[in-house]
Length: 140
Image (cartoon, rainbow, N blue to C red):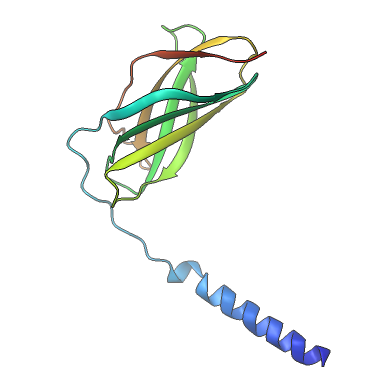
């Protein structure tokens, strides 16, 4: 009886592996890039803690490769945003807008940070998006 249950379990597990195989996944070709990528909401602080923050913004769908990166350039001097945080995102090409969320880690408590946001394709090509400088302060 246990041997029969083991065979069924192996068969079900084997089918699961077959259907989740990378070879069965479909890849989509890059879509046409947007003529002009612009921020439609934000950027804004979604969450601040003593040593981290999440920055969020929405842009029109930039097109190009499905894989993109949301990028936050930040620092404690608004003229010197020399630190970078990045977060990968997969575009939904059928949606007109894209929401980016980037987690910024390793911050100091009770410190004011300045930042701008940008986005780029997985190829490293920028979407040409650049926000004005904004600021936030971490918690104690």
